[in-house]
Length: 259
Ligand code: ADP
Ligand code: MG
Image (cartoon, rainbow, N blue to C red; front, side, top):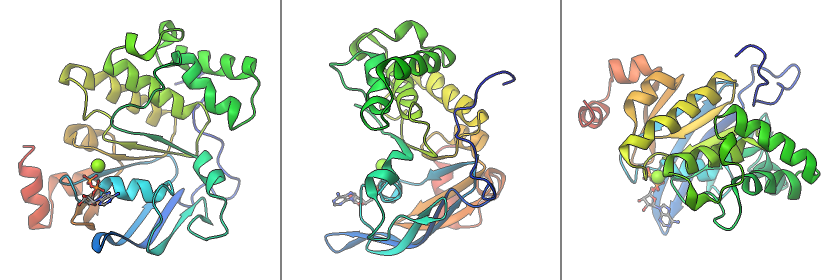
């Protein structure tokens, strides 16, 4: 990546090894059913954490709590050492430091790709139109979407739309990027190009937490894998540990489905 500008913001001086995201004993329930139980998580700078587990195991809820889209019932979450679950924390400011991409419907259909990408930098981060467009076009160019800047989303393939959604999330130079099953709604032949972009974003140093059913991808790209089962991080470790020699019977059973 020589000569290329990183998408990741400069590390906070003196805090470069401190976790970007930390969760401690996070609990979340919906209508009496406990969806996250005592979840602990630590995400080091410039690393990728993959959340795997069956549907309903709590992956999306974990990501939504990290982004303050859901309020935790108990426990605490820190972003760069700041407790963001503190009632006095500025939730909007926190969300501005975290990029999120969901499974689908990420782009505004009535705006071009470039307009989608420049919206938050202009409205939320106060960049001028010229600055935001220059930055947006450069980012699109670099991530192989340069020719799509002035297209509307419905003129793009599903894979291109998700790539544009990732670019939009990166345009505000977030501290942390959360990706929730971003390839789950895509035709199989479009999955590869989206995952290739995520790899590239990782190579540029972005810190990410990724909920995914793409086990081969998780194994290749993740530094840390967490297996969620009924709201508990039942097993965690390196991809070699979790995929290569899972200790828990439930993890083994889950992974057999992908073998
Ligand atoms: P995953 O992403 O692993 O499929 P989720 O975090 O979406 O799991 O869901 C975990 C559990 O929480 C599921 O049983 C789901 O039905 C429930 N759940 C998630 N969001 C809500 C909500 N807003 N209201 C009620 N139940 C919810
Ligand atoms: Mg989910």
